[in-house]
Image (tube, rainbow, N blue to C red; front, side):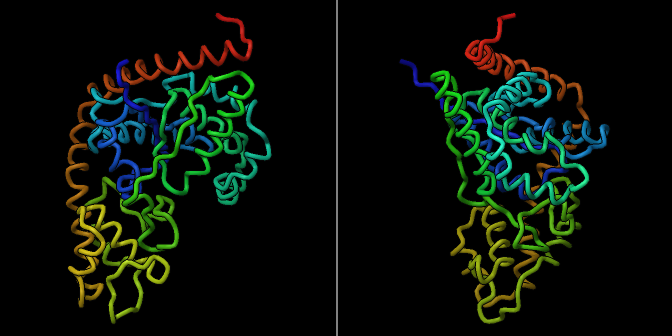
Length: 333
């Protein structure tokens, strides 16, 4: 029997510009996965509208994100790149899974609590049922793995629970996926508030992929550290969260192990360390920014990519959806 590749699926919302946390977390590792897995990577535009969006800005960000995916090394010939809303099966399966997801499960989701607190005037049903749609995003492609950061494990866990509940009623319909967590750079924290994950909502502590080099350097020079002068550059996330975050960023940008970084800056202060980290990030992001700009100038090419990606994704997704519809008792069209 032919050895088939395992399947991997993941997406990022185009709700804001992609940043260093996105890149050194999931995106940096996605190109390596293409050789090992059959990969489906998408722009999760359906998820963005749980928060009000400017329509023109959302379209622009979705296109830019597609270009950035390619610029980050995702070859559309070797993986499936698509826009979530271009494959109607996502919302179709999302509704079915809504009916197999418990109210109590959804109410316990950390992200619902956090986003409700931040958007008190817009606590909508989509925000509440977000995990059911996310489960549909995943289960449609029958993946073995879902690459996630530590903070997203809860979403994979509820996806697994939904799949197991559905399978318990109807038999072996969905493959139950495992979370796939990268070890280095899995969780990049904000430069201005290292106790929180890097986020576009705190722009002064967030480095964007398309940002100018001088702006990146300014942010790193202002990065929060501490007052330790004895042995400043050492990895200790509890005692030194800001410095440990910079070390993790430098390690991910250069491939150097933590011990080598500590040795490199032994006896040196933050004034020497922070600009070097900034320069490493500037050089890491430079080819991505330049290639993204080149691709955005060729919209005809990008359209061929998203059209082909939607066709390939839909072919696989519809096989799963037809099976689900038959199991729950819907009359075939």
